[in-house]
Image (cartoon, rainbow, N blue to C red; front, side, top):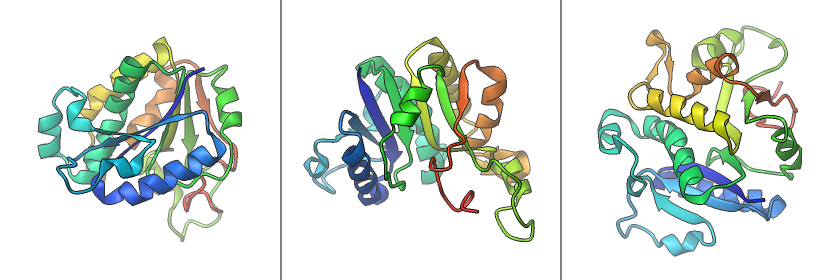
Length: 221
């Protein structure tokens, strides 16, 4: 079985990215790791320092409208927008059976075997920001904060190669072309807010409620 982990980052997060990848492969050695870089190397650093991970400039992936997106989005918005397109590129060029996404600032402490088994019966995996009522609405984040920023966190996702994942990525990428902004007044929470619709629009969507998955400030309680 072919397994790939990918992430998307800009050059200023490459140190975080290498730390994430090193922690991941320490427990998941059978994976290929792909780092999609939204800006250019241009001699600013030695890409060989990231071997054996594959470092690829997003601008070299043939992503439709990439140049326009670099102009219309901030750096963080561009990073978020690229997740769908990079996943499409990896499925097309490398044909993995399983594809996992992690944000570059995550650290891994365990094998992903439990998540892999979830993909036996699911085409997509997503993680909710929380799974029980938050303890006190006077502290942030509050439940209403997630209503506008997204019920699911886009820092982790997983895909099983197939028709459902392909349809989801096409749908997501279409929105990412010009609807990946931070603008809460318009209901825009970059790539993440669109995940609210995924369990409604697609079959075999697994919601990962395991307390060890995607632990951060929003679910530390």
